[in-house]
Length: 361
Image (cartoon, rainbow, N blue to C red; front, side, top):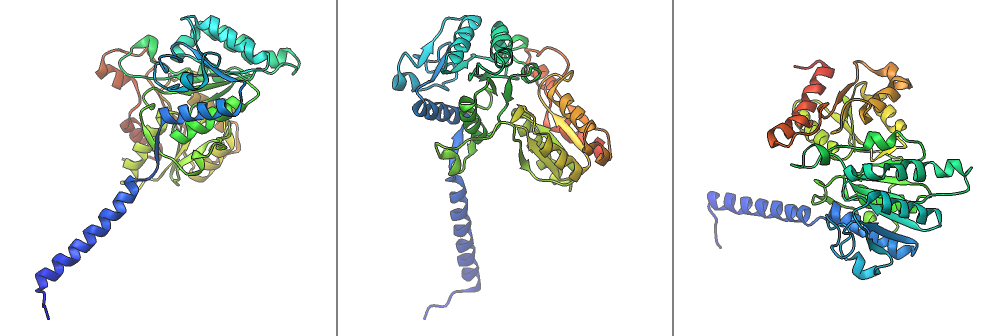
């Protein structure tokens, strides 16, 4: 019979514990992940396969696989008629796409960046958004305008701004601003199937970010309903409402504040127009406090609209403190990296705002 010393027994037990932890950790690492880029690519592929009326057009979307590789492989799979490279003329190819939608096709019009959509804004607003109304409901315009939006990195004032407030101001458009890979896949598919024009505001910083995805999201039938927000983190002390990359900033701030005993409820809007007012109101009634977070400019921004909706709703009577907006600085985006960071909201800005609202030092 072999007898182990006390020290040996301890070492054996420690080894068993570490082995068990390692096994558990490996299962977490192996959880299904998908980048935002792949989520968009998969969503486009599935909808083009499902409906032959769907086609993609824009600058470098075909032979080059897209400036950000969102359309990778689609030209080789579907050919010249359904994945179309255009000249550098946003007004021109946006107009072609709107006309195709009026004629019964389902175009996906890619702007290399939404900064360039200013060249085509007449087509988006006056043609796509208003035709259903002006035709007394006889002419639908089932078109998707998509591309990167919001603050990028190192591209300065003309290439780094959020158009969420611009487009969500216009009746006749639906506007979505996804955050996770599931958001992007489900919303691009829902947008393509929608009978009305939908603006899909992506963010190039998120394209390479991988998120966990459920088995349900891998299904070809997976959709995220337009107009429905998602509670990314439940909490009881204060509500943080954000969209796109600002959701990430809010979650980072919430994690830090949780270490101090402050539980933030983080709402990922996903859809800006229509806005899921019901989810926000229910949360504010529960937490009695609200902060909005966005990377766009403060005046007439998404946060301003959320604040107004709360002021006009039952939730106003449940507020224990004024609502605060955390936004980008009210100035064009600087090029210098240090100034760029200063121009955009950071998690510490959200933490400071939360403590101010809750009157916590």
